[in-house]
Every structure is written in C-alpha cells, then in structure tokens.
Image (cartoon, rainbow, N blue to C red):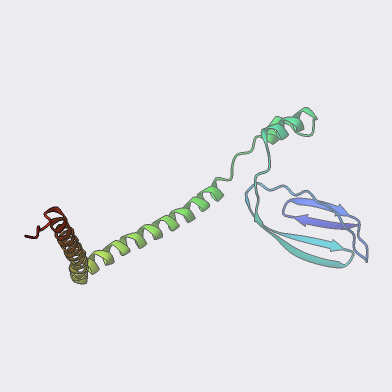
Length: 166
C-alpha cells in the first residue's frame, strides 16, 4: 500500500511497480492553494506540489441535496469566502486602475503641452487651409453662376425681342 500525505490529509492507495490510477478528494480552506504532498511506496519517497486557484463550484441546490442524502451536515455546508484571496484580487485591480488613471493624466498633460506649444500653430494652419479651400469653392460657384446667367440672359434677350428688318 502507498501512503500519501498532503498537509493534514492522509490517504492510502494500492502501490504497483507498473503504476496504478487513483482518484483522491482533497479539501482546502482557501481559494489559493499551494501545498506540498509526500508519497511513499515501499522504500521510495516522492514529493510533489499542488498549486492553483480553486473555482467555486458549490451551489445551493447541490448543498441541499447533500444534506438531504445525509452526505453532509449544515455546518459543513456553511463556508465563508476566502477574504484574503478576494482582497488580493481587488488590490491587483486597484493597481491596474491606478496605472490607467496615471497614464490618462500623463496623456492629458502631454496633450495640453503640445497644444499650447505647437498645437496653436497647427490649428491656425489647418484653419487657413480650410478657409482657403472654402473660398476657392465659393469663387468657382460664383464664376459658374455668373457664366451660366450670362449665357441664359443672352439667349433670352435674343429670343425675346426679335429684330425687325425694314
């Protein structure tokens, strides 16, 4: 028989030279797990580490069914959240939010410095180009209307008062 010790949990499973597959149920009190386990099969001792973040899989319906089936009692089903892990996650979020806010403030400061040093010159140049193009379109439109009206009035004046030959 092989003995496995993981923290304060002990297991015994069959031990073969070819190896045997076994399923163990480990219970942890915190969401973030880092535990060293020791396996001894005969004279051979091996250690391995279990690390990770547990995901919550318990539901109210599942807890009620375990209590009804007698697999658990009410005291085992009342589990407080791992507040240290929640605080750690929230602190990492706050770090990200603070970094984003600092980056945003830095971008605003650099933007205003750029605007006041060479931004006004760029805006003035863009305004001149815009109004120059606008004035060109207005001139072309006026010239076109003038030419069209001149042609129309010439034709109208020729057709309206025909000259009589004497």
